[in-house]
Image (cartoon, rainbow, N blue to C red; front, side):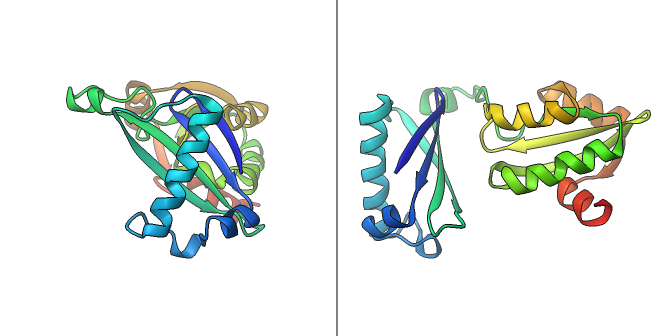
Length: 192
C-alpha cells in the first residue's frame, strides 16, 4: 500500500493486487455498505493516520476508487470539514470549479488531450472546450484540485489561465462553446 498526501485534505492510496487480496477486496465488489469494504477503509484510515498524522475527527470523507491495470486500485480520499459545511462555506478546492487552460493551436490541444487520457484519466471528472477568439479554452474539472502533475503537463502544451467560478463564468459567457462534456475524449477520438 502506497500512501501519498497530495495536500492538507487529499490523500492518494495505491493498492497493489496483493494489497487488495490481503484486504479481501475486489474493485467490482467495493461498496461502503459492505462490511468487508468498511473494514478495509478502517484499516486504510489507520495507516494514513500513522503515516501522515492526518486526523479524521470532524470530517466527512469523500472516497473515489479507480481500477488499476495491474489488478490493484487507486483511491482518492478527500476530507470535507463538517464545520465549514454546516456554516455554508464553500470548500477551498471544490470539485465544481475548473482549472482553465488556453491553447493557441489545435495540435497542442490534441497532444495534451492524448496524454491526459493516458496518464490522468482517473483524476478527471469533466472537461469542456470553448473557442475564445482564435484560442481554445479547456475547462478541466478534477477530483484533486492540487494535482500539480496535471497542471505541469498542461503547461507544457498551453497556458494556465486560472481557476474559479468567476473566470469560468466569463469563459462561458464570452467564448463560443465547442464541447460541453467529454471534450478531451472527443478531441482524441475525432482529431488524432
